Length: 390
Image (tube, rainbow, N blue to C red; front, side, top):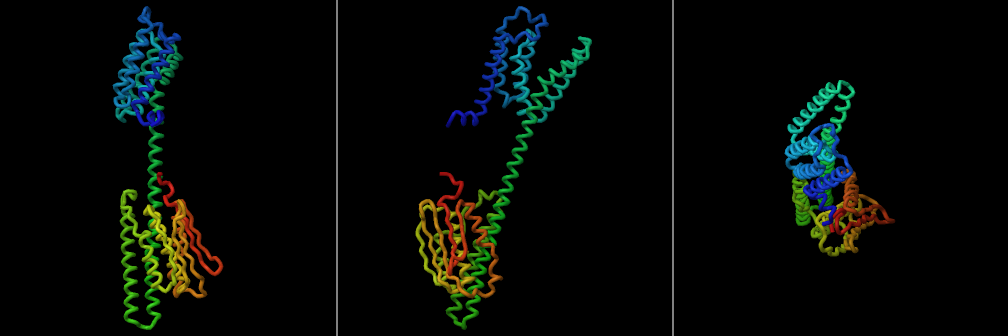
């Protein structure tokens, strides 16, 4: 850990540094003669100058407890300042009093801050009136009031302003976190829509194909099994998504995702049962994070579903392989002249858009479009999500 990190992470070290810096600056002021500022007081005559330094040291020691016990630190600061003033006063103790007042405004309770502020106003008002009457001049009263306001009230006002800025910063951070949660939940809702739409589309395609063919008991039962399997998978994925959506803390929700590379053979089998002539090249990608594996699964499922919808019975080439720090997914199907029945009802048009957004969020990219007589979906994803630690 660097010195800067230790400094930022330790409030005790910060308080000790502030106290030491105040002592060094105050000692320098004493050495150059900034003592006896109330030299008109007769009790200051004949007092050794090192007394001011001793009182400064006591005040700086009191500053060490200003964060945990701000009122005690203030009491110590006021006491040494009064004693220092009785022997002539010094600028060094003004620094101590300013710091402990600032600490009260920053660390004390609201009730304590209100009490201290009230006392400060009483002291300023009383000293201004008494000083003005003693001197017989109104301008003296104004002068005393301005000086005491700078010394006693400004640190309280400054700390209140800093406290408000911190509160606004916390509120802004909370709002940003809430917006991130809402955005993630909206993405989950889109995922839920796409997952269920894909399974329902698959069920509709299988049942439509069965209805279009002559009755065959074995084949129809196989179709019903495919429809049932797809329906159960849809229910499973809906349950997983709903649990995530209902979680108070999405980051603490169960990270297990419903689909990964291990389920790609199921997609291949389902696509072949639906009439696609599929050639699959599935390479193992060891150590792949669940979120990347799920995204690959989603891309393959969406591409195969679209091929079944818009190019039924076509030749499809599926390729999933590692490429260094990346995973590439390519799904290519031949473009046929006619589409599946009820194409508009089966397609929402949002699946590839959602997957393109998901790929970009993970630090990858997805492209989809015609390439001559073929339609190609190609995705490149990092083997570690964007933002993941080393």
